[in-house]
Image 1 (cartoon, helix red, strand yellow):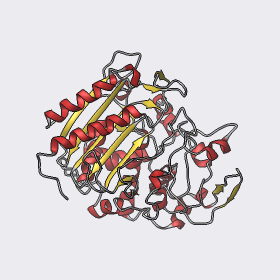
Image 2: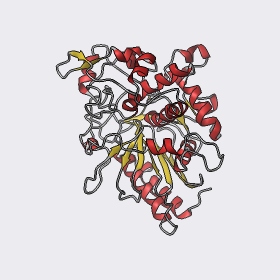
Image 3: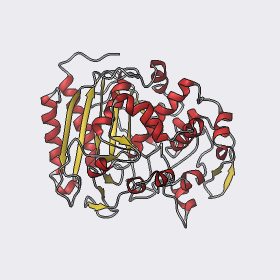
Image 4: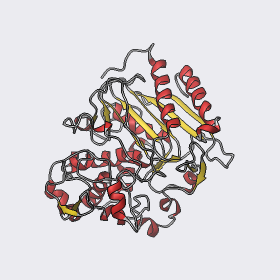
Length: 421
């Protein structure tokens, strides 16, 4: 049960206001927040799992969490750094495990390729400074892949292994397939699949049974439908085929072996379980209920260090709608009054100054392309997630609820002492 009835009521009213309004085009959404003790502050579901179905959204609904997977893959990599299996700053290890990266070329603006000038490290992969991009955010990469095209959600290794860099390593921050490569490093270093590593090293210790790259039959029975606002139709929404289908169709181990364990976008989850991973991060890597440690405190501190202080306005450079069915054009990743410097940790955005919603300094946050967003505020001991299955990314209705529901959570905590670190 949620421990703030006021917040529960306010969040529910807010979510219902958008799911009941067809003009918003948001069939259903789940919002959940957790405190430092691992207790749920709120658990809210609103609307339906699918536009054309009758099943209501509830806390058992399963979502493709897309890039929210990146945090999980990065935890695995940092666990291997703790063990000495991986090294953050050793390019020779990168090339030994991934010889493809030693030979990789850089795509120039004129569509030609040039040699890589600087080395690639695991730290650069986790901080999105290694030079990779995404074809749906980068027109240059999109065009280079045609006439066949690139699609990182096909579920196979081909596109990820064959994309060139779009920037020289270390020259700038750009969001892309970097953490897919970090996951490949983890697999090749251990001989285990990334999904197995996540289960053994994160999900099983925390008692989480509904986060995985290959959903069980029960999870698939609770799967939310995927929706699309097609370009030019404004807010009109339609139910569509799933963006990330192959893992949902795979039944046998043989089939699964031919599907990439995407560290960038491969997981499906119940949001209420995902935030329990965040609860461990609120507590320096140890879960408050299970007592299991998934990361050491010094590792958490490293992950929360700003890796790109030389680019304090990286989040204000904007994202083009290279594939408008996948993303809206976004002028800024996380607007804040006064435009304070923003940072990037390993492997998430850091809002370095307090935000209007109530979040504290150095709050980690990130998102998934089907309009899912999470945050983890170690200063105030609060974390949460909002989940939908609506394309394209940057839906203003979901973004509005992300902010409104987060603010409702913090408002309900104002009468309590700050959870200072």
